[in-house]
Image (tube, rainbow, N blue to C red; front, side):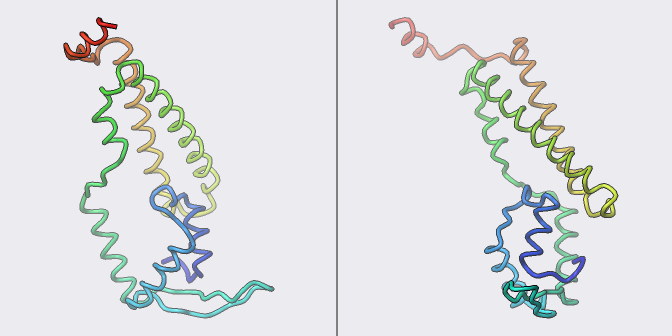
Length: 182
């Protein structure tokens, strides 16, 4: 919506802004989306350009109808919470299957990965600061807060497991009998 672009530049801009964390960004699938948006009348070709020996590239811009539909869609996404079915939430519901030691080990590894992600997001946010208006990087701030909240929760659960505040039930009698018969 900011300025006319060709699909390669769209993909590069999305990656630069870290949007590949929110959805898969591939040039091939982006061309499919661009074709669909053009068929729907939401974008139109503005011009075809060639830079040096590179192939010609079509630059697209939004139409009035496309802008209206985009604004309607974003408004709905902001207003209406949706179930997003994150994989981690599904896995956490079965945390007990890992046993206390396994759960702590898995959570520690995830915590390290979340910390690494946070470092990368913070680096990207620092680089963007001052280069573009804050409005164009608020999604990075949101991603930071989400990762910070996840890391805090993980560390809290690890502490509760280690202190016994989050206790595991005793194994079923059949498992105890199997262990005793070995």
